[in-house]
Image (cartoon, rainbow, N blue to C red; front, side, top):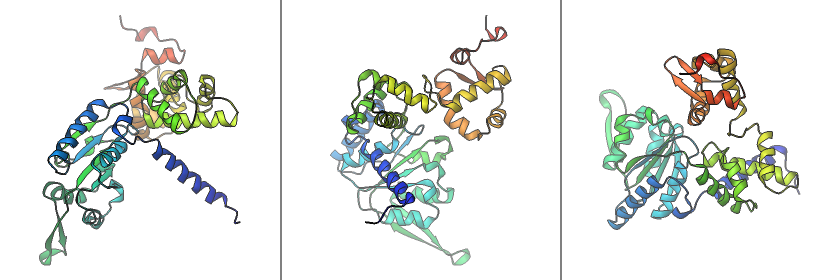
Length: 340
């Protein structure tokens, strides 16, 4: 029997981990926890389309990463009994790539485009008639000899997802006639129920107290919750412990995640603002330079959660740490910053 190389083992583990993530996704609407307003609107839209024997209209989901946009696309596919074909904005590099995708769809298929805000603008314009009239206009040649051919497309539903809806052009947003839905952050109780469901799938024994402890540090995001659950499971398995609150605290301490779910980078960011700049305000570029981190990472990954917790605020003059941030880091809040 041939011995596997480290590279082959690593690739195999990645494949298994990816498959595991898919098994944790809900398989029906009843298993999908949270996002009640979006879910109820979608159920009505899909039921009405089914009764009319029509194709569901095009849909756009937006919100921070890990909230379930792709999962909703899979559920819509299962609810309608249609095949789903998945791609992403950056993967569609040429007009021919889009034409190939659209012309290979069967009637009623769903095309899911993730990170659609990264779609090339020239390709975006080709998408307009496809969404609106079910046709694909392709220009062949250049100059006076150029000619346009029109391809008729089968009826299809485009479902798109983005984390940066502001980067989408108004003409593209307006063509999502089925609706534009914003996914909200989850509550601790909703995350707790997601963790308990994932634990059952992973065959891990846990209780409400343990699930809630993980939920409180999950940044209000199911993807993060499932990641932390799997790491806590690993720690418990290696150390021959049961998965309880103590194991959770030990695991997350090892990962550098504190009781509020702050990562080491989150904590460093707050400490820099407090210790080096007296709590702020200080500009984003200065913070990024002090942390040796990209501005986009701070703005898109760290800041939303810190602002959500009330530890950081954006002001016209820059970022400032709140009194709550000082207390969390056990640092005395300056008297001159207190408002009377």
